[in-house]
Amino acid sequence: MTFKTIAAIALLMASSSFVQAKELTGYTYSAVSTTAAVKGMNRISERIAEQTGGDLTIKVHLGKTLQIASSDITQAVGDGIVDFAADYFFSGNVPIARVLNLPMLIENDAEWNKAYAAMEPILKEAFGKQGVTLLGSYRYPQQIIFSTFEVNSLADLNGHKIRVTSPEQGKFVEEFGGAPITLSGSEVPTSLERGVIEGVLTASAGGAKNWHEFLPYNYRFPVNYGNSMIIANTDIFDDLTEDQQKALAAIVQEEGAKITAEFLEDEETQKASQKAAGMTIVEVKGSDAALAREKLAPFWAEWAKQNGPEYEAALKLVREAIGK
Image (cartoon, rainbow, N blue to C red; front, top):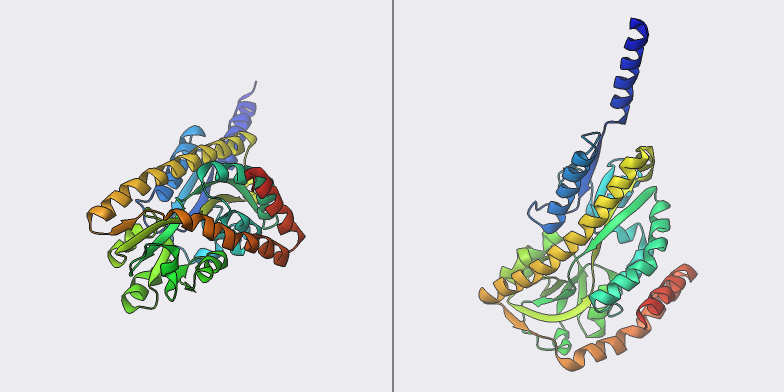
C-alpha cells in the first residue's frame, strides 16, 4: 500500500467521522432548570453524547432563551428552527392529542397507560404530518384545584374565575358554574394578586410549586392529566445513523418514564411542604367524582363529533382501551 493510498484512507476516515458528528439544538418550554422535566432533558443530552462517543450531542436551551413561543414549539421543530424539543403546549399543532386530556375521561395511572398506548400510533402519524418525529413523552400528576377561596366540593367553584390551560378544562369549570380564563404561566401570579383569577387547575409539583403563596386552598379533585411530548425534526432524525436513531429513541423512552416517576414523587413532597406552609388541603368529597363523570361524559362525544370522524375514532379507541 503506497503512502498516497494510506493518506487517502486516513483523509476519508477523518471526513466520514466529521460528517457523522452532529450537535442538535434542543429546546424545552420550561424556564426552570431544577424541574424534573429539564433535568430529564439534560440527562438525555448527557447520555446520548456518552453513548455515541460524542458523535451526537444535544445542546438544551431553556424556555424563553430562544425566540419561540410556548405554543409554537412543535412548529419550530417541524420548520427546523430547533432539532429536538419537549413540548407541553403541542395541542394547537396536534389537536387530536387532546383526546388524552379530556376531563374525567382518564382518572388514574393505569387508565393513562392503556389510553396512551392506544393513541400512540395516531399521535405519531399526526406529529409526522408536521414534519416531526414523536420519540416519547412524560406526564405531570393530575391537574387539581388550587384557589384563593375555600373549596370543599366542586359546587364551591360556582361564580369564581379559574385559570385553565385548554378549552376542555374550561368546559369542566363551566359545568360547575365557574368562569374559565386562559392565561400564560407568567401572568398567573399578578392575575391572582389583582383578582383577575381566583384559582388555577395545576399540580402541586407543577404550577403550584411556584404560585403556592398566592393559593391558600387546595381541593385534591383530579380533573385531567397534562403531558409533554419529546420530539425531533424528522429530516434531522432521518439523517442520523441507524445506531444513533436507536440510541436516542431508547434513551428518550427511558428518561420519559423517569421524568414521570420523579414528578409523581415530587407531587407528594410538594403537597406536604405546601401543607406545612399553611395551605388548607381538602381531599376529594366522595360524591363529586360520580357527579363530575356524569356531567362530563356527554361532552366527550360532543367534542369528538364537532372535530370530525378521526376524533370520534380516536375517542372510541381510548374508551375501549380503558373500558368506559
